Structures are given as structure tokens and as C-alpha cells.
Image 1 (tube, rainbow, N blue to C red):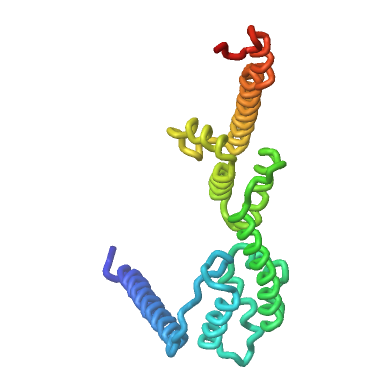
Image 2: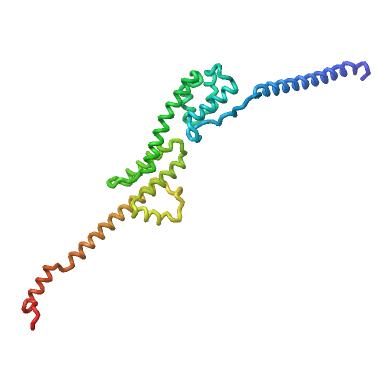
Length: 256
């Protein structure tokens, strides 16, 4: 190839080099601008982003809203509070987030949304507290069957701990059921389960075992009671002794 033919190639190569350099410079400028924008956004920001809230967060919903409102005021200002409503969704989890979605919270005025959620979950929290009190104090009624008692334990446990997982509820239910069994039944259950983890037993199996031991204990009580009656019946009464004595010579009197 002659030097004459190299000319267009060099021009094309130079153009590509210049274009690449221009693109790199433009990208650098964009990155610099983005960094500046982010710095301006965060400049003066004092309130940290709140942790996502659910009913097991360890704080109440009103307490969470105090933090959230401070965060939004710091970041967005408080001139248009209704703009906070769509932001809230990011910071909710579990049942509260489901309620927010059901209410279409992003479209509601902020004060209305906040008051509605607080009122709704204040009722739920108090209801849960009442069930927890019942669960802690639960006991088997004298005339209540073990099956009926086991069903009642399950129901109250689920109401007292609405946000627990399946395994947690199962463990709590089984533990409470065993804890409240009659002493004689609980003693026999403890013997049979001494080397076995509680998780290895299905709840229904525990209830069935407890029912069998209860029947066994009842039979033992009946047998013991019947044995005592037989023993007592075989013992001579005072009238029997008198009758035997009267049949002796001289009526049982001692001769001088």
C-alpha cells in the first residue's frame, strides 16, 4: 500500500481516537455531576433512614411515625406532607404493609393515612395482648377433655402470637399443652419423652398419648378404689366380733 493510501486510514484512526477520548471525558463529567447531585441531596441531612416497621419491631407504630416524619421533614421538607404517603410503603413490612396496600395508602392524605393505620393496629395490639394474658394463664378445666383442651391451646396460641412462624407456633403449643397436663399424665409423658426431642412429635400424637395415659390413670384409680372396698369388706365388723363372742361357752365370759 502506498503512502497515499495510508492517509484515509490515519484520518479514520484519529477520528476514532478523538471520539473515544470525548466519550470518556463526557462519562467522567456525568459521573462528577451525579456525585455533586448526591452530595447536595445529602448535604445537611441529619435524620437517619428509619428501619422497616412491622408489628414485631420492638417499637410502637406511633413511635415509628415520629421517626418517619422527622426523616421526611429533613429530606423533603414539610410543605407538602401528602407527598410522604407514597414514600411510607418502602418502610413497612408484614400486616401493616398489607393494610397500607389495601387502603391504597399512596393516594391518601398523610394525616388520614397515619391516623387510620394507628387506629387499626392499636385495636389489634390490645387484642393480641389480651390473648397473651389468656395463653399464659390457660389451664385445663376439670370437665374438659384433653382433645378439647388441645384445640383451645392451639387457638389461643395462634391469636396471642399472630406473627410467629409455623414452627414457632408448634413448639409453643406443644410446650403449653404438656405443661398444663394433670400431674399423673404429665409424669408418664415425661418418662416416655425423656430421650426424645419435642420437635420429633406431632401435636396430634402427643394429644393421643396423653389421652391414653389419662385413661390408664383413671382405670388405676378405679382398681385401687375397688381393692380398698374389697379389703374393707373382708375385715370383720364390730357386730361380727360380738356375734362370734356370744357363741362361745358362757357367752365369752371369763371363768373365775
